[in-house]
Length: 212
Image 1 (cartoon, helix red, strand yellow):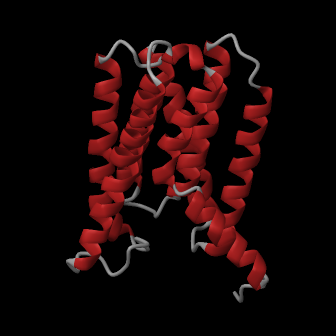
Image 2 (image 1 turned 60 degrees about the vertical axis):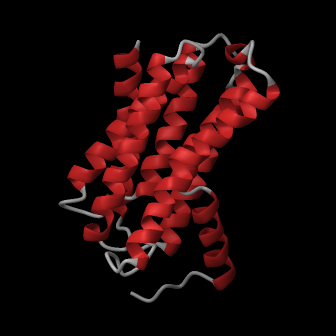
């Protein structure tokens, strides 16, 4: 079927896909927590907080992305965009390792917000399930990531005594925009997008009740 979307619309959708890539979701969530629950970071200097944000980005975005780049340069994959299910297997495993490590650190350090603990555990479970589902279909990682962020923001509202309506609304809007963008510029089917979205939602719920 010929794609009838206009070029500006496709460019916009591509930009959204890059900015809200699944690898950036943990960093966005960390920045969100600093904004809405600053009392969870009492006793931490601004410099230390910046280092924590950097470490989250370094471990959950840079290293997995660099691994994908190396796989591409070493000819283990045809593209850095991981367009096939086979190309996604090793990046899944690498991401799982770093997500588990972040969960392990958050669980064993007393100055970590509980929200980080269930969030990291949730994205680890999501990656594990995604790896299994990848044997049957190319489930959408963008949908998985943005829905996990949405559910994590909702769960923060339940756990902390804060007014979070605006952030929840923004998370819902973001989820809709990202999924729509993937429908425009990716080769995912609606089923792959829906299943990815469901995995992100359910795994955050599972992690929340497990950590609590």
